[in-house]
Image 1 (cartoon, rainbow, N blue to C red):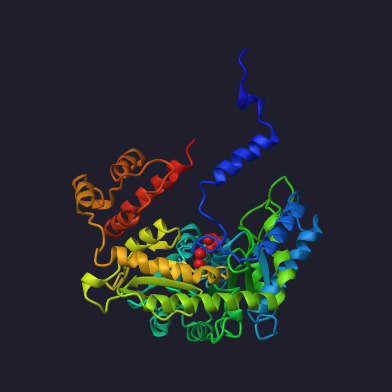
Image 2: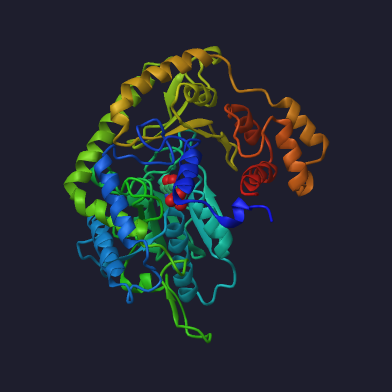
Length: 497
Ligand SMILES: Cc1ncc(COP(=O)(O)O)c(C=O)c1O
């Protein structure tokens, strides 16, 4: 019989060597070269502590905090930490602010929508239809996902070309059929803090739930200077999400969702005794869940305390200002709107002649070749025809400060290399797709056709093109269902053995 290495397994050192080899292919998670996906405190000892805490909690199952009281204790501490940071600890009308540790921003957003939908159904038994979910177009896509999964009507409100939404435009949509209005602190694509005070007051007056999505900024804004009042100090804010795996510097898999009042939080739960197994009572979407990220986040918050967060946020503030200043000195490049940070979106400066503008996606590709990753965001035409320009997103983390000067030089050099080039042409692939009838009467390519199209664009399995400006330009021009089918295929192939 021949020896079958796959059947026999490998030694531990071989396994780890292989993993190290695979990890070599990954984008750098530390050191300040990534301006998306990862949030680096720049403190290696904090990561080491988080790793040790995660290992201690690794065998646990968050399904039942009564069987594993250590999880309940850590979750209580995390909820208390975040609640204090977002001013939910002061007792006000509506009952105590209470909350849940979830697996991430998307789960917190889904649960905020589920809660609001349950309460709306309870309070509007006479209403036959689906409730609406109102939010600026810049609200995170997780809310579109929630609307689809939970059967609400997604009702996006247009922003100005600078990415900011007018409070009056949101308020004018608030009617009896609205289950939830969402505002962000800040919105990921634009870095803008929505007009939370006005919108939450209006929601309160109409008895409508109002969620502040602070998944991104919830653990930076509490220590950021000169912020508007964006948190539970607004009496109309009924729920708020803040991700510990973003500016809480924890490994992925941990966020907090807070509600004003116990009754609201209870509406988040799923419970059933109507099956022959153990009684199921879940505050979250998952059943069995890992306690490792919870323990890591808990250790980090215990180690840093509010003062540690204040210091890390101060580094983010300095880095944001340095980078915004550097962008101001680059001809043809600008920051979208007037964000506080820690998110910035870079755009082509509309105030200079076209030939001197820096296309942000060409810039992202060029700065990528210099070792920095900034994130392409396609331009977006809203229902009213107003276009949000294509941009490059930057999440600025404490570690950014160490490399801010190098990054500014790289940005300037990259801008020089691409200035005046404009967006890549996509006429040929667009014409080819149109000739095949895609986009007409809802026609979208299936897996084989979509893959053939991607291959004709030079895309191969498991690799993204080094330059993404062309792909993004196509995404901007294609009808959304066709673009979505192509991107699903791109990701879908990645998971195939
Ligand atoms: C404002 C906002 N909300 C929600 C999310 C979703 O978070 P996650 O990727 O953790 O699911 C993000 C992620 O960037 C975000 O920025």
